[in-house]
Length: 230
Ligand code: DX5
Ligand code: ZN
Image (cartoon, rainbow, N blue to C red; front, side, top):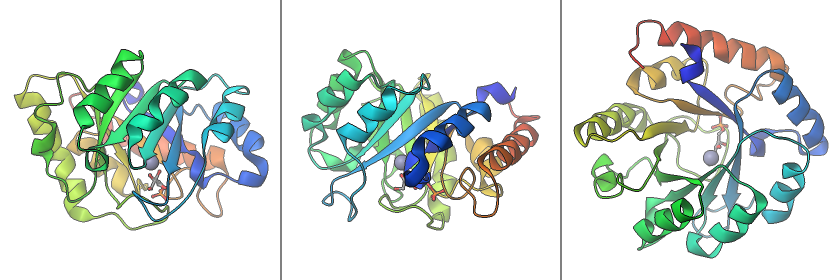
């Protein structure tokens, strides 16, 4: 049943001096997708990559691309990412007063639409979005930086989001991003996570190769899904 839990690699945590090499290793390790953290220096106090890097990498791999927009006015950027050939786009609830419109913009372009929630944002904000959103991204760190420690309340919130999704009769999946470590991944899965974003905590781990770390992550996922109804 491990195939029901997917692992996306956070490109922000890869070796940028050898991105192609890392992507080939991720492919051989059987990674399920690439997660791109897009930051604008306003919604979060950091800058990362833009259209050109994502477009260049689109030329060299068939892996599903997942764009996590940590930007103000996400509506301004959605169409240009869609044109690159993206499979998932997440928009932060907190990043626009018109999050429903932004989610529709993603959906109408034929891309899976995910609503992302900061650690302090309560689960009830998804109530009127679930008719349109395909998934909910529960941020377990405050967005903007890799290598942070998970906010434990946000790890618990995964279960509350799961309960809410079930109560509303939705099929939305839960993605979790931030300090997805070998220790926390099983708890996140038990709480309802079905797509894990692996960064410096589990896919690009110091002292381990990408293949070793993905193998270890798969191992803990296998143990966690045993006995969990998925
Ligand atoms: C944080 C990013 C993440 C994160 C994951 O804003 O969205 O993708 O870097 O990596 P670690 O495991 O370093 O938290
Ligand atoms: Zn992310």
